[in-house]
Length: 157
Ligand SMILES: Cc1cc2nc3c(=O)[nH]c(=O)nc-3n(C[C@H](O)[C@H](O)[C@H](O)COP(=O)(O)OP(=O)(O)OC[C@H]3O[C@@H](n4cnc5c(N)ncnc54)[C@H](O)[C@@H]3O)c2cc1C
Image (cartoon, rainbow, N blue to C red; front, side, top):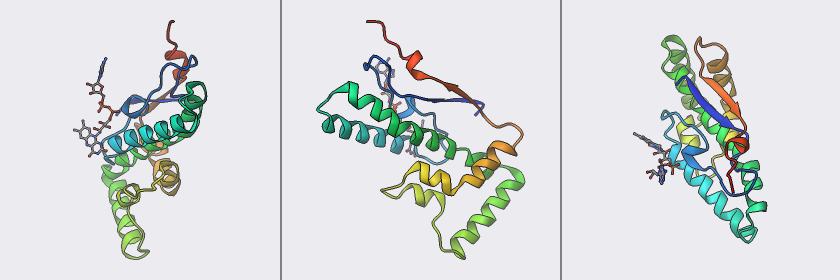
């Protein structure tokens, strides 16, 4: 859990390559969202291809514009695992979650993510305190390698 990457683009500048699924966004196994996120990428890509008559020069930049933020949110949400398994923050998280479900009658994060229209950016926003805590308070947060995948994905013609 020490390193994972978050790309700024999922497509290359020549419009020949696009990253989807695990190749696009590193996921921790905690939330069991890897496959769901991969399928979502495929659905969005398919919809954009239909919308733009397979014109990759239009489709790929739009795909990145739509999915990069979602991909980042999906991988950030996995950081809740750092809280969940932490000795005392884990207890705080579980007690808070219990109150959240029993008193406020709100769905837990797993139920939220399993809704058909679940949006990772929205769920991340709802859990921003825990993600902030995971990033700021814990002593050994994962290092995020920010990189432009467009540069890495340049394909020689
Ligand atoms: C043990 C385990 C449990 C999991 N549980 C869950 C879960 O409960 N829920 C969930 O949503 N997700 C789960 N996941 C994650 C999920 O399986 C992945 O996120 C998902 O399969 C990603 O799909 P993908 O198509 O991006 O990649 P993959 O499924 O990895 O597909 C990539 C494919 O590309 C092929 N390939 C690789 N290199 C090349 C090459 N050079 N040339 C040709 N082909 C190549 C591979 O053989 C593979 O078939 C789990 C993963 C693991 C390992």
